Length: 333
Image (cartoon, rainbow, N blue to C red; front, side):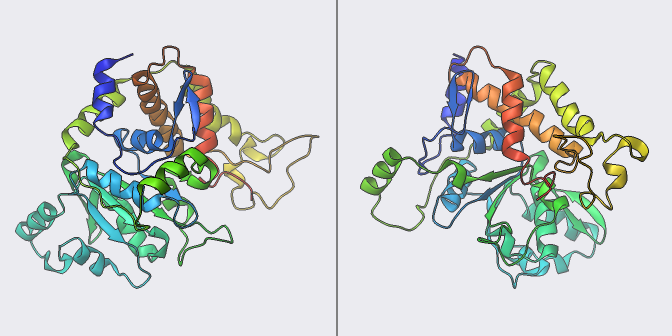
């Protein structure tokens, strides 16, 4: 067991959220919802949480914000929010930016390293787009981009996707979904009976628990550097390349590429062979490739901190694709 890594990750433990239902196994060690969200943070990956109401999304957001000393931005999505009111919520006034000096002050006011958005799908598309810019560490003014967050910025959001039952006021399109990196449906890994016992016997108030915490930004930056320097075997790269290029292949059509017939895919019968899945799956984007590889690095480090010695990187990245692909727009619904 890597004691130093274990000690560092222990400092990032969530204060209130409880869920001991394993999501996947890595090197024989269970990976929980908390581990997956934590992997997104140290991997600098934007994370979107979806579930039925009251199942812990906002609690996770509060616990994440506590890791940044509660100095991260918290935004409650509203369908009447405009870009101007978004920045007013963040304590800044975009209208005042008229010269370089005011721009510098505006950027200094946006000093957050984490942006937490509750009910993202209630926001108008223009507001969603500006939020994703903040998640990625920049602000766009008059067509120009300006970096914020001093090199580290990440977003975590919750909401409902348009699945016919829990849809928000505004859906996010595929391009914006892709910028969220990690989509995670908590309902697939809800708490077990033992967790329910612990939660209901310890907690009397049904409201989301407020979380206080020490600023761990320096430690998160340090762990992010460890993730970036960690290189798994060649296998995850091969599998990522397959999801990008192998799934693009389609025989007997011009270019043998699904991307080249994107205007008609999937509204065309491509299953010309028995058992073929050509019209079921679209290739992933380069961003999804990079997300899967970064999660592979981060989760393998978390598993090693738990004592895993032999990480099967093939199984790990395939499990990751199972988690992130359904919401990335590659499936023919």
